[in-house]
Image 1 (cartoon, one colour):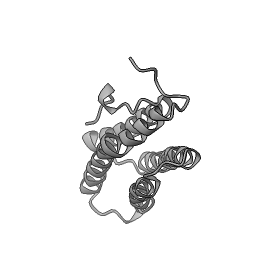
Image 2 (cartoon, rainbow, N blue to C red; image 1 turned 120 degrees about the horizontal axis):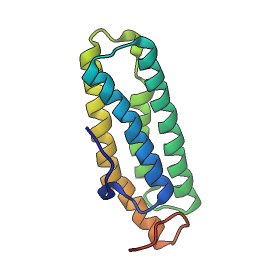
Image 3 (cartoon, rainbow, N blue to C red; image 1 turned 135 degrees about the vertical axis):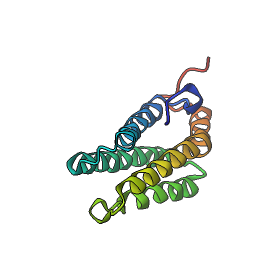
Length: 140
């Protein structure tokens, strides 16, 4: 459903690697939806993994933005908080229609991540390149 390609690159190796990992976790959700393998233990593990990695990734970006006085920090964090809220409020125990729940969750994650990377994180990547932050790819 979502595959990494160079169009997603924000020209920062660490952020790109973290986005690749997020895409990999989302692909685990894709597999659950396509196979309808709604094993409760597997589902809770994927949700916990997703929640934890989102936390790590968003904190990494936010620390960079604070460290380098990113001018769009407030807007970027607000966008992050939308994802935090959504993932922290996944209630696996309360789901009656697993198929709909996972399909809706998957659609949300894919839409949010692609929009966020292509619009919000690309802007951060450009800023980091401008100030020549280490970890940025060499211009080709």
